[in-house]
Structure formats: C-alpha cells, structure tokens
Amino acid sequence: EPEVTQTPSHQVTQMGQEVILRCVPISNHLYFYWYRQILGQKVEFLVSFYNNEISEKSEIFDDQFSVERPDGSNFTLKIRSTKLEDSAMYFCASSEYSGGSRETQYFGPGTRLLVL
Amino acid sequence: AQSVTQLGSHVSVSEGALVLLRCNYSSSVPPYLFWYVQYPNQGLQLLLKYTTGATLVKGINGFEAEFKKSETSFHLTKPSAHMSDAAEYFCAVSDRNTDKLIFGTGTRLQVFP
Image 1 (spheres, helix red, strand yellow):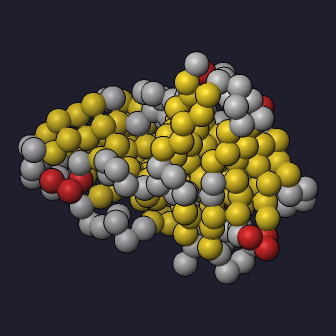
Image 2 (tube, helix red, strand yellow):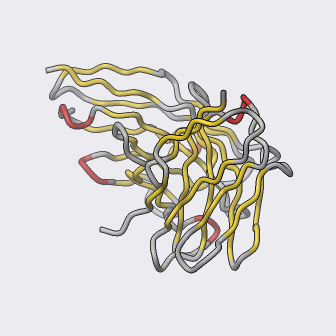
C-alpha cells in the first residue's frame, strides 16, 4: 500500500541553525501538508501546498518557515533559523484531491526535531 | 473558530470490553469529522470520517462513530477491545472552506489482558 515517507526520523540541531525536513508524498497525490505536534500538545496545521504554491498557512508558519517541491517526488519544510520552541514532531501529509478536505489526508510517520 | 475537545487523555479497558473515546467539537457550520489512530513510531492513520449522509460511520478494525449534531459529538466506539487496539487516537474536524485539519489533544488507549 502506498505511504508517505519522511526523513530523517530524528534530527537534533543547534538553535539558529537551518534544518530541512523531507517528505515523499504518495505518488499520485496533488495536495501536500505539514503539521507539527509539540510534546504534550495538539497536532497543529502549518501549511498546505498545491500546484507549487502555498494554498493556506497558519499563523505559526512565519517567515522562518518555507516549503518547496524541488522535484517531482519530494516535499520539503525548511526552518531558516531554528528556535528552542520549534522542537516538535513534524508530520507531512498528502491527499489526492482537495474536495473541501473531504479527501483523506495520508500522514507520514513524522520527524522528531530537537533544538538545543 | 473550530475546536475539538477529547475528554480523557488516557483510557484503560480490559480486553473484550467496550471502548468509548469521547470527542466534542465546536463549529459554526456542519463540519467534517475524523478519527485518526497512531501506533508507536508510525504516522497517523485514518480510522473513519463523517462528511455527509448517514450519521453512524463504520471504520477499520471494527471501530465506529456517530455524529450527533444536537450534542456536537463524534464519539468513537468499539464493542470489544483487542490488545492490538492500544494506541493514541485523535479526533479532528475541518469544514468545507479549508483543507486544514484541527485536532484534539489525543487519547491514549491501553488494553489490559
């Protein structure tokens, strides 16, 4: 069964460093998402992406964050200058259609980011 | 603004007992409702969803949920728990105008033999 994959599974970085989290969505999917979960808190929406553009973003997704689909398979989240509060589990998801979000979003296993 | 409340961060049941995980939502318009499950070291997997139509929704692994508009609830049930059901369960809501899912804080289900 097709699945969303994410690399790395764990990343430790120093405050102020740039990190890139990578995702490979399901191959025929057109919509891509990033969510994050700070330890002990809710899973929070960060951004959605379609047709090489951000379609929606949350207030969390400030100028330190960017997303890109550099080729036909990868979808990346870049944090330009990490802060301690960026430590979280980051989930990538993809869906086949938007359909007003009625289409299922398929999630990857997550990347646990720790900022020291 | 939409929000989701999951009552009980931890629920423990015996194998074979009824599983009931509670979810209440607030939304100004009829929402779409989802339950996701997360097994250790894995991603979020969709259990079931309600968009329109029949309010009792059946999902994978014997789970079902009922959309009750009058109670703004979407509780998840399973008649008989299995050891393999031990996981974290997330309720989520969205509406027709957005793609984003709004999640509850999750409920960790433990199943004892």
